[in-house]
Length: 266
Image (tube, rainbow, N blue to C red):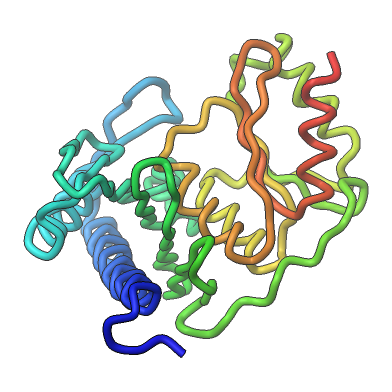
């Protein structure tokens, strides 16, 4: 049993405190964004008509960063909306204040506030708050995954032919080798969903509603929060190169392996 002066116990305690902070951060960020959406927002286009940003994205990220500056001043931050600070601890909070901004702007509910904590290259935890349901998820490779404090069940493995595959494939890639690579995997899945929020797709995997996610060119704020929780539940996350792109695949182990094999066949 861990006790006073036990390094392992101290590390577990530190991680639990980090998880408690992560829950507070994503819940506050998500609720702030939801309140701002209720008051009306103007969206600005970033790289395409489907890649947008609002004042709520910036405000939620700023609120999270300000809290971290007060409570974890030695830690670094990396935010989707431009916040960046290296810190001195070697640890970095990776922040997605509103994941699924197109859905957020359109009035759809499949969006969330998400973040991850990593120590160098080691992923420690992820947290996701879904304002529409009020559900907050947290977990990591060394931290049991929960939804509103209730433990999530381990993932049940299954082949791709019995799995629901969630993805996002930007329309300009249709009719290119990128689509061909994706199609090799998609044809082997039981069914497909394109819902518009990578972290929420990962939470659907964590909850057993979906089974595997696959997308290319995924930035860390879209990957790491969900990856930490999926790994906590016995799932796998992998990267493969196919059609000149780096693909991220996460979910139940057998389906992940089959998606990776299909992507790299060509």
